Image (cartoon, rainbow, N blue to C red):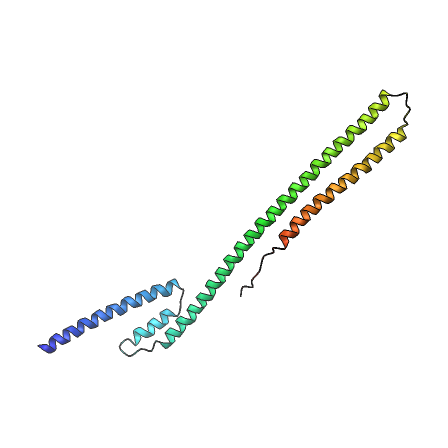
Length: 188
C-alpha cells in the first residue's frame, strides 16, 4: 500500500509540475509575442517534441539573448529619436522666436519709414505753402524740386541708418540663436 501512495504522490507532483511547465510555456509564448520573438515557436516545438527527455536550452537561450540585444538597441534608437525630436521642437521654437523678432523689427522699420515719409511730405507742403503765402519772394520751381530731392536724400540717409540699426539687431539675435545649434547624434 505504501508503494501505491508513493506512486499517487509522485503522479500528483508530476501533474503539478507539468501544469506549472505549461503555464510557464504560455507565459513565454505571450512574452515572445509581445517582444516579436519569432524564433520562440520553433524552440517551443523542439521542446515539446523532446519533452520526455533532457532538453538543452542553450540554443533557445542564445536566440533569446540575441533578440533581447536587438530590442535594447531598438529601445536606445527610440530614446535617441525622441531626444532629437525634442531638440528639433526646441530649435523650431527658437527659430519662431527669432522670426517673430525679425518681423517686429521689420514692422518697426515700416513704422519709422511712414513717420519719416509723413514728416517729409509735411515739410515739403509747408515749404510750398510758404512760397505761396510769401509769393513776393520769387522761388523758382527748379529750386523747389532741388529742395525736394535734397530732402529725399536726407530722409534716405536717416532711413538707411535706422534700417542698418534694425538689421544689426535682427542679425545679432539670429547669430546668438545660431550659436545654440542642435547637437546631432548619428542614429545607427
